[in-house]
Image 1: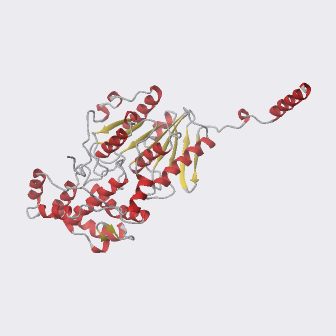
Image 2: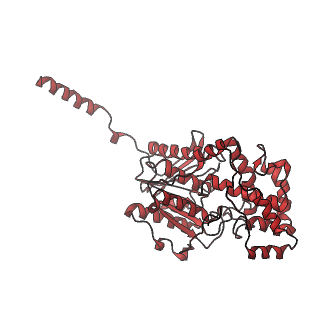
Image 3: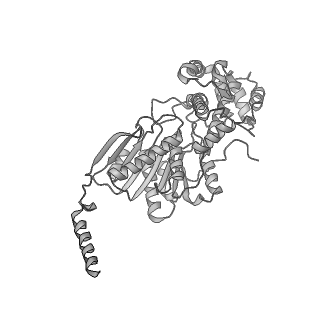
Length: 419
């Protein structure tokens, strides 16, 4: 019996010597660049020669990588590996793009190696995907940096777009060919249907007071509203972008959700006395009370139950994260108002994860996703230190000389009004 055991042990040892070991496998050489399509989603991977073991995953619903990595050269010089996915589809399929980011992160681990630390980040809608990634895949990402994210949740985002549509209707009249203001035509196209009507209205200086009514009725900042609010010159100003969201994007959500998605239960649209005086000074014939009354007559709109269930499943946040969140926003943002950060902070507080959130604001440059490379690098440095020490970054990590707005506190989400 004892002799037979020794024979088994000997056979096992011989087999172990004959089998290849993990240390004998070929490892990838750096620098390394991979580019292709993974499960239908375009991706890019870049690993520097001096890889420090840290992976940054950039997520975006755009079908290109124009904004990928932001401070790419500097991050590579610091030793970060970079991976970016554009998602398999362009539009509102947030759940799909969140999965695409997870697939890419797993793919990186298979082809390059297991990172010591993985941080997911994104700008604008990519910031939403960043938060969804942190909520849905806690074992995959160690931290998240959502930048200029419309983080109040998909239903509040759509409600804001609906409110903009109501203000436009009161100011200019809603074209019947677009469908109902609360339930758009399913095949409505911004370029062919909306823009031909919209552009002459925007370009006509006589309409300035009416556009100001649309802006003020929705508590949007002036900075970046009539100028390009993006750091990319080929994108239109905020007034056009908001109307794009109020029409084309709402249609996408309606089609995806299978029904009306707009709702504004409990909303009250109003202007301050100072705002009314300002608008009357621009155009004395405006009947502001009648315009507000028209908007308020359309409150109480509810999304269809099946559509609301879809939105809740694919685009609502839970606030339940298991790693640090550094949320960055421009203090003056006419596309994704800074109050989005308040809503997500309140959500995290409601589920007890508020200690995992730090919010930082840029005051030097108004606009949407308008950050300098120095500011972006400061954000990554702050998250690195947070993960290393376990201590959330303080104001010293975001100095005023870099353009950070220290001490800035955004207000509450404007609708429904706070008691």
